[in-house]
Image 1 (spheres, rainbow, N blue to C red):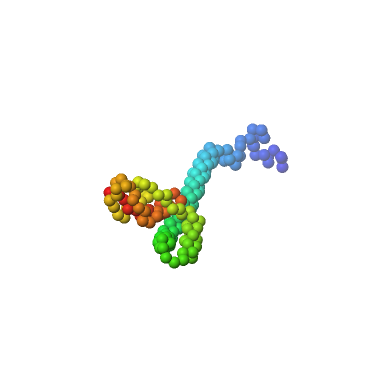
Image 2: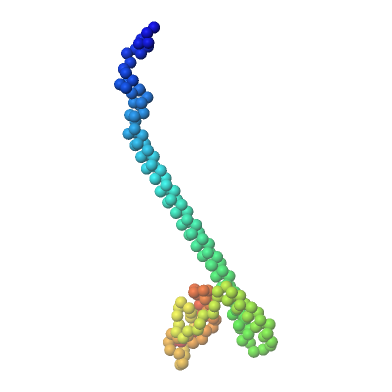
Length: 174
């Protein structure tokens, strides 16, 4: 057997055509690039969606924290409002001119200290009626006050921080 018969008319090594495998790998280069571009675009969309969901969740957490703080403040306000009637009762008892008031004064001081601890303060008295801070429970004629001025504070008003907890109950001059 001759070694020439084993080559079966193959072209020389440097002139050989590319094998079918080499042609297959080179041909779809453009479709692969398109697929990579599509995958990157889809990845970008998923990243954007993830960022939006994350931001929405952070906003939800912040909103929930604000709502919880507001609910706690409303509960505190409701409880403190109910305590104010005790303050009124103690002040009426203190105004009485009979008996020993030491025990009542101690309870009143303790109650006022509790209110201050929870950011409750007594409203400063004002001359002119202001519906944001006063509740007019009666109108009275007065020679010493102009119309619309507070004649008498019947129940003190109270503030919770910078909000009105309870308006002062007053009589107003007509």
